[in-house]
Image (cartoon, rainbow, N blue to C red; front, side, top):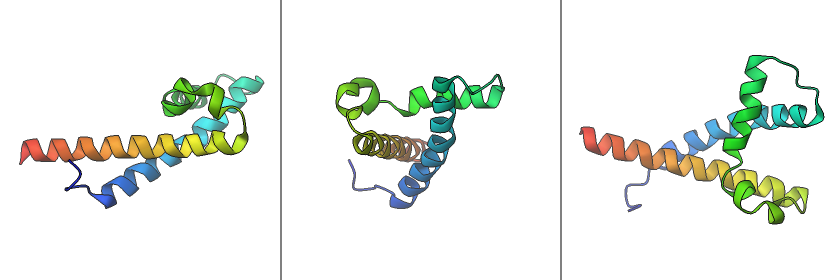
Length: 98
């Protein structure tokens, strides 16, 4: 399954998800604190955080909420997970159209 794994696509897609995670984390923090306001873009990022925190923080919240180190390790795992899913999706699409 992974013999055609494209590391470059994985790294780029993981970096893009990481860049999305930063403002979404800040927006979610602002929403929790009640200081976010009504800006549509920041509201979008706040809601995007609920997607980017899946699967670790959604399924295993009691483990990843215990310490801040585990919390951020879980977020890194999530962006790597989404990078992997995107890399495999791109591979499948390229394979079907070639």
